[in-house]
Image (tube, helix red, strand yellow):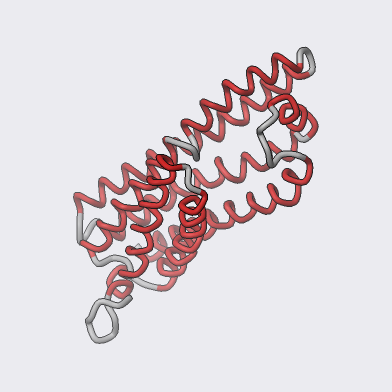
Length: 232
């Protein structure tokens, strides 16, 4: 069990690293070259054609690598929760795997769509822009603008509830998970930049905190202090 918890902690920290590295690639390589705005489809498709390698690297980092980390994390979380809340532990595992599959699917779809648009751009730039608009709408609906964010928000809420019931994680970490989950769900319906910021920053803090907890503490010591009281 100890090795599995360490594996989960490492997976959580690598998941954070994929988010941060993805942000660095975006800020340093993509945004300065025109990848920060999709307002002009023709211009954006031209950007994709000129920066294929950087875009593929970015998509691999933020989607596929992150999705693989979630699979390993699901195993460790199930082991941590099952003794105190077996039914909820199974539900959390299912939601984690659904999230992981959705992330990997969106990443694979995005890379395939990139190749399709770039190929069309060499033949007919106007048609490539039109096709990109359709493909991007599908990606957004499945990904960070819709389905994936909803699943993520529900996952945070369910996991926080299960961890509170099982006393498997620090209470404050669970409360932060509730905030992150609610912010993500509300963002989908409101498109609020403030909620997006809370969700994105909270997710990074939460994963770092979770990784440290899983690397350093057993499920019991994570929830209980030295005197037997529940710690924050």
